[in-house]
Image (cartoon, rainbow, N blue to C red; front, side, top):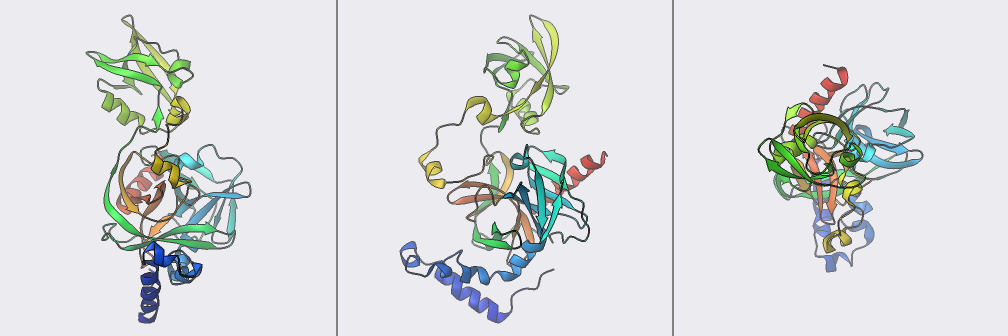
Length: 341
């Protein structure tokens, strides 16, 4: 467990943070190094940076770093953001200053957008979890900032809202419009070039089962789809003219099936946000200034304890983290899946 700040460090930190909390017009007069994520302020978070140095993983595709991960065990089990690592080529991982090649994706959870990765390593330093993710709004939190090949940097922010569910359109789709009827879900339209179209589903077909489970409500089908990721192949049973039929189809990312929706003004001003940033059962909301390349790593409190995993940059003012309680639960589930149990 990391030691807490001494009184001198707390005093220095309080002075720096009081400056960083000035109104924007006042901050503009501060030297860059004294602003919220300036070097002087970052220096006050050196103990937390050291935690990130040893307990966060940096994923590379070729020579470019594009994602972080949370070190969960001494022997190389890492959690990261599934939708970002999915399909990535020429992968390698750095933990602290060491490079590991050929990481293997062992299991995944579409609902939480998590992937369990294994690297061939020993003696790593896993994160130490706090007792609870329930810390007050306004509490300081720390995540990964940009990194060099050798050193991590911190990103500094606060808990900015109560933990909550994040709704939104399903990130993975079949490519159909459905209507509830007595014996299943009637297809009213099939979008061209989607998994449903390529699998031969037609307008008027009635879907009765998804992966062997009976589906009579749209909500129940959506819940089952959410357990998957783009590229997963699923079995669908349906009726056509009263005849029972079965097909296999490939699920697609929503934006690939229907195209990107027109961005709101807030989205246009938000810059580089995560591709998957909604449909999470529960998140911690922070104002960490992350981007799509700095998510995936641990979210730390001031004591360097992990309270969650940074899972998405939502917009210019909001980043989301999976709370430690759900993160630990999904990790155990994925470990069992990876071992075949």
